[in-house]
Image 1 (cartoon, rainbow, N blue to C red):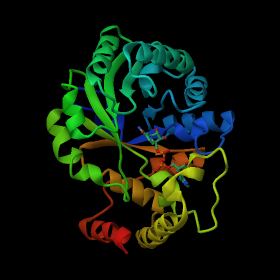
Image 2 (image 1 turned 60 degrees about the horizontal axis):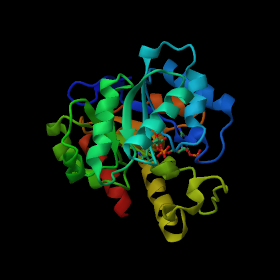
Image 3 (image 1 turned 90 degrees about the horizontal axis):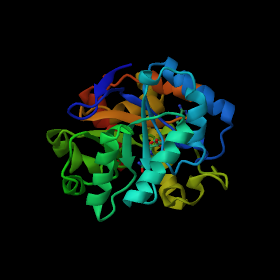
Amino acid sequence: MQYRQLGKNGPEVSIIGFGAWPIGGGMGAVEQERAERSVRVALDEGITLIDTAQAYRDSERFLGAALEGVRRDSYVLATKASFDFSPAGIREAIETSLRELRTDYIDVYQLHAYRDPVEPSIETLVRLREEGKTRYIGVSNYTFEQLERTGIPDGLVSNQVEYNLFARAIEDDLIPREAQAGVSIMAHSPLDKGTLTGKYDESTVFPDDDERRNMPRFQGDEFRRRIAVARRLQAIAGELGMSLVQLAVAWTLRYPDVATTLVGAKSPEQVREHAGVDPDILGADVLERVEAAPAG
Ligand SMILES: NC(=O)c1ccc[n+]([C@@H]2O[C@H](COP(=O)([O-])OP(=O)(O)OC[C@H]3O[C@@H](n4cnc5c(N)ncnc54)[C@H](OP(=O)(O)O)[C@@H]3O)[C@@H](O)[C@H]2O)c1
């Protein structure tokens, strides 16, 4: 496992982060016992960053149970205020997170999305840091302009944004500019929520309790297009002797400013596959073929 630093003076984190939305049940129910085993295997595999949120249903509660008894400084816990970004709303959210996660501090406390007025929200995060409730602060789904509006206070180490072979907007905006501002990118949804595993086909139907059931990109022509791209990419991965999951995740790590990529996992087997990703495996010739695949 490789490790990179978050921000100018933030913590070192594994380049593969444990994305804890799926264990919370947002992409179909996951049994608590399996969720806890997945988290413990992640730690055994050298994954030190765990990302969750107020909005992730059972996720914080399952994590709290899984991490009971694990040395607190052996992992970096990132969670988010998801709903109410007023000072009172953020304070209520962090208290619930601390209780569910069974800890007395968060490592990176984030705002889940941008909302005006941003100043009082950021001010609250700064105060929570001074009070020792969080060691660092972060934001999520911010453009560079929105990041600048925060004034980038001391201790703001990361911006968590979507990044995968279907979602490359950050290459024009954040990747060239964030590093200079001392803020790292935490990539999320590196598998496009599953299409970049190659395991779905035209007949796939997601269960009622799975967010993908109603997401536009998992419906009709757009879903069929993504499945076709995944098949082309799977052929390239096969030639390289790796899985499409590993190819897609490695691809998100090719810029050093992407400090870590958060991969959603539902089982120990999935976690082991993520931990085996080699970020240095994609040479220029392969990258060219990989990046041409979405266009057909
Ligand atoms: N800040 C934000 O707004 C935001 C938004 C989204 C995500 N995130 C963060 O980023 C993390 C990752 O995103 P995500 O979980 O939404 O999507 P993702 O990582 O792109 O995809 C996760 C899904 O891919 C499939 N999968 C993962 N590993 C696999 C493997 N080894 N073999 C086969 N299938 C595999 C599973 O699908 P099946 O369920 O079909 O098995 C899993 O539910 C989240 O958990 C969360 O921490 C943040």
